Length: 544
Image 1 (cartoon, rainbow, N blue to C red):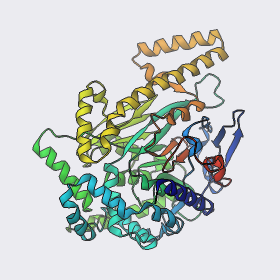
Image 2 (image 1 turned 135 degrees about the vertical axis):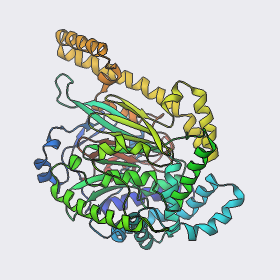
Image 3 (image 1 turned 30 degrees about the horizontal axis):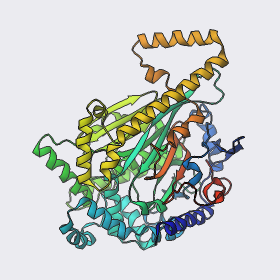
Image 4 (image 1 turned 90 degrees about the horizontal axis):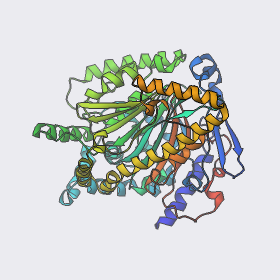
């Protein structure tokens, strides 16, 4: 099928899926047409069934809604909202995704995971070994580390007709080959008279050369009981049960490809590759599976007043722990629960860096702070900011030593085809974002100064100088942007490019996805009708 036909079929599939997901939880929105015909979408409330839940939890009411305005003549006009589904965690794992599989049949046919598997194998394996790996894969790739995730994959395989070994390969190899941009930016809340009310929003674009996957982009709302409140949301691919992009109340997270890993000794190099083999065979947990546990594990500190859901999760957690301990001594058994403890925030800061994993950038945001973990096998380093915080596909140290990144880019080319370009462009994306953020922040300051008057402006200048004297960096204190600038920054061609599969803006304060777009296979400048490319494709209640 030619690329134009694939794009058309993917877009038609998205429309059919969107119209057929009436049971999925949807946010009530306020839509305003601005004079330049752009569309404003505001997440003003949780789904209807959550209204009482929000009233009971005072943490939510302290965060006013933020309106995001897509700029005109941007990629937003060529994008569509991914189909949205509700996943009930109280159902048996084998049954959770059946309704999703029914709606995604056409997208599965378009994507052709068998061909995608061939591409994945060729990208990480020398040519002579490809045929051998094909023969071994059907017998060796039968499970993931966690029994719950394995059961979900078996249910997806049965409902969709996709071979189980293809789904396992998809889940254990995908997070090794993704180029992305992620981070947090402090946004001034609407109605703030002096700019004192602001919070972090988490932006994320996912880039990859595997074009067939675009048709599989979905948004999943997780609930713990039928009709219960949404406890977490993930934007991902159908058939992928780990988490690449997700948000729960009080915490958002995303995963970026990291080209560096510790090659200082033979033991380090061997340990890294051995861990990868163990992940592929299902004996160790993948990074995306760890993020899933951080997203879905009940935590009273984050869940707030949802005592019923937390109690239910705690009972299930005890059962899983008992089963996991029982099976952990038997070689070849599948573990039932990942090794994640609560409180989640404490675990991330104090225990996650020392866990075994492949190399990755793990980005976490709360309403007050953005934090990136440069993760390697058995160790990691955090960088954080209470203002603007962005992560691409290079280490913080690469900015001082560009030749270090050049070496990493060559290494990424050996890891997977196409990654050298993504890594090589990482620094360019970072510098461009810094320039645009500076201009957006300056515009906001000038606007606030003119509105509040010279007296108030001088008081803010004195306050800023005091903050600098106390060792608080201006980067943290003053680099805020307006809601109108958020999507301008995210949709800039250097950040959201032709390899971007989807883009997301999350609000960790409210625990919601505020804006999301999935991009079709090809995006010629002036192709397709406006009716096909705008939010008009989605039924009422589907916009956020």
